[in-house]
Length: 357
Image (cartoon, rainbow, N blue to C red; front, side, top):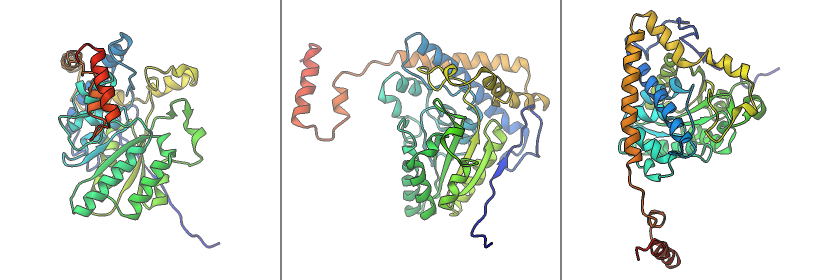
């Protein structure tokens, strides 16, 4: 038999679920102290997430996609990027966006139905939230092509879910990235469920990482609940991209501990035992154990920081709640460059209906 090709997918893990090291700290993490600010950021994200859900439950926010269980993957992705890079998210990567400079009030505005939440004050070149599944991967590939044509040392990073990796948009991005050797990192956040469709039902691939092989990209599978592994995987991918060696597909293995969104009830399609098992591997617990073992964290520090996180998030919530509602004509003003006459007439009618003609 003549072998045409063969491949292996490396699995990356440094912190085991019990908080002990599975391997020495890699180049991305020079020492344990470097993890402390990111751990605190993970706790901030979890605090924000719980308060956002409470807002939705009390009718002060629209449908919201929780990120519970994804904190290490999200924060690690954002922490690995440079300010000049471009991020193309899907719709729940708040930890990455906060690291990029997006404000929590902007997240709340978006889920409150106000598109001004997509007009980030911080990362002006980052893409808005993308609910159409995996189309953001093509946006990132396009941005990466622009970087290459301009000779810029910048990287485009996109995130999608396990379900998103089955979309043609994802495969088109992989093909483009390989054909043009683009500086792009496609992050597949495998949380086990594409809404109610389990991972095993949507693809026959052994790993989702290997989908990048078809495009000639570097591929890696990572314990997405291990912040250290996330940082190291992203370091490798960014190094390749900035050195002109092309793009990467990284599969981050994690678990969605909450419902898909607040409009979902995951109890209808997954068992309680599965969720309980996932809680034993969640990212916050293992990193807390590691930092505590390193004498870098304790209960008193956590109590103080949790209180501070609550205050910081409350400031953002109040800013969101106090934001004036846009006038009705905004739905027309920001949709057209040159407004058609019939639409202009509708705009005037909408204003008149409010008695402001």
